[in-house]
Image (cartoon, rainbow, N blue to C red; front, side, top):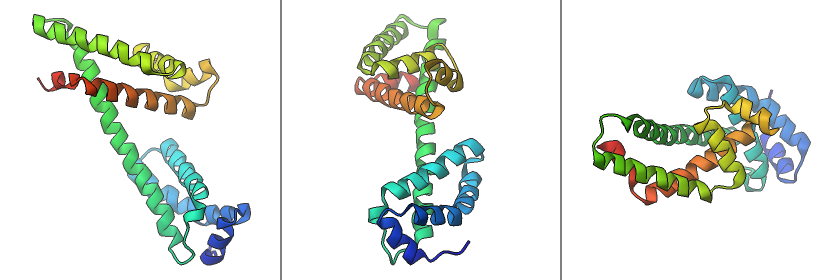
Length: 188
């Protein structure tokens, strides 16, 4: 679908839903293909495409009538894909560390046990910083191993809301634990 970008940008900047719809219809399929090639996950791709257009709407006042709208939209999506991969790496490192600590219960030195106990104490203190909802979702997901879909149903929340709370909780816990330099155990 070919659109008059300059006119659509002007109208979008003024809050036109019709212009937004035209832009969405013109770029959504191409954007979906672009993101899917990177992520190879249809559900996640759909989330990022939706978030990209939501960000376009939220940042419509920053649009330049002389700029390249397609480049702007694809840049938003590219940054979201990069953020996703960055978050995945951080979560994997944290989860690997947690798994390492849990597996250290046999054949470990007294020093390792002491460090592990300190880590568990710090984790417990750090969980106290979380909001009630973040803590609840973290414990259901990470400690009771309940899938996000089931947590969402149990708490009557959307899956995305559960993911957002979990991401927030992991970010806070990671930050708190790193303040105490406990992650050095992972590299021993």
